[in-house]
Length: 312
Image (cartoon, rainbow, N blue to C red; front, top):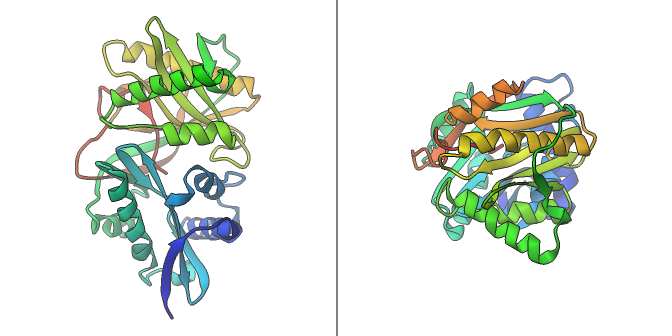
């Protein structure tokens, strides 16, 4: 029997989704592993955002596993990585990681990472072989959406072409203050064009001071009746702690506008100011994992950074 790694195609997506759910559901001990993740759709959403970063492993001619690579400019992460349970321990995960590392190298990624189960010594050891270091707990948090008077904010989808291009540049300027070269352009474009949701823009006296990439509803990374903030950030600086709660409120106002009941976010606990702001607004952890970094540096998981993501 042989294992061949190749690009993941559109025709693979139904089986890739099944493998993803069965693999994670089996690891977590669910009575029916196929029900893992409900009506969220990480597989199709990730493929639509960056099909060139999605890879499949075939074992003896059948799909055996998949992995998805995300490059946010100079920052890259991968996941979900899933392998059919009956093939665990056959080296398929390691084979899938080879094109991931090549993708990071081609993209000029200077800081790479992943989210994995903090309790799994097997996962931490596997990724450790490739130079990833377990550093910070990451909490996925949720709260019920409340009808609140919105702050001054805008939806990028409502902008004309010229204004949208200007806003995209402003978002890039915000993310650059977190980490040199960090750029959400690919995810922003896909979120608007597929569409998967929208991009919330927070304005201040000097223009855009923060933004959030939000998925909404079934068939996205959010799932039904949910708004998932895949990435959110305000510009670093003296006003960050003041602007960040306003951006959280804007995301909640957007979720209320879309008539969903739950708002979900992820945050590195190293960003303690952002984490405290979430707790103060009623967010509670529903899932916890560990972020692994390569090289063994904080990247933008620092106290002075007010940003949300979870690298799942």
